[in-house]
Image 1 (cartoon, rainbow, N blue to C red):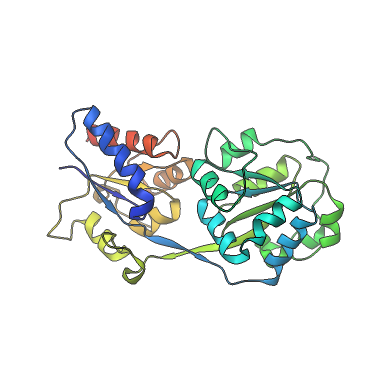
Image 2 (cartoon, helix red, strand yellow):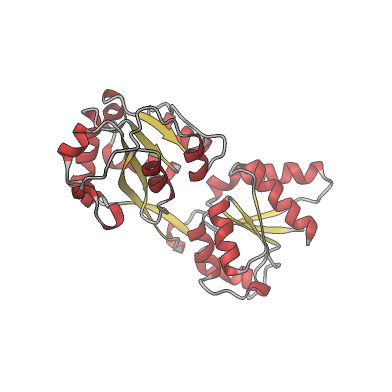
Length: 299
């Protein structure tokens, strides 16, 4: 039996497991075992005055858009701000942009309907299709907002500047998010204000659900040091940070199974580490399943 390791929780990975075995059945491939190893789990940040100030500004109409690049960001916003969060964005007329279908579902669960979801479900896809109505290419970033890392603390400055502008975008994301979206929005003529609402932390055994692998067990599995388990045939990597948590910063490519990468950013990490990989056409379970089966058949 072929075996793949998915860097998601069992609950998050269930649609992929179904899609993978449905595709395998169509192609006459025996059932494939899927191991779930989230490697990292999201943790909502501690409440900060600056974050609540940003939401208050949204309620006053300070932001043209709010963007969400993961369901984790949506859930953390709900945890931080409660039911007032959706009300604030709706009351302020803030339009909602999200990266894909999973994030859109999470938004609807808290009472927000996305106004924009790109066909290509990643940051570059968002930028390629992002509506530019209301953007101002000549908009400068006030010195009060030009701070290192663009943290919520730095964004808590310069409220007058933001209230007087008409092209502000509130970017809800994780602490390890790459600046691709924010920098691209600035290039389109928007003022991107970062709001870090969660961070990714190592998945310890005590935080896992039944049937999920800890970081240690997952590393042992792909290294072949778990004598009771068969070797993993394919790693399905759902984020660059999770892949690095699994294989380390300087792996031996000859000892690492091929990787089905969820998108271009994860694929770039594979290239940097010298790992064999195939990139899914989109981050959907079906596209990931197809990339996985193609790797299994090419082995």
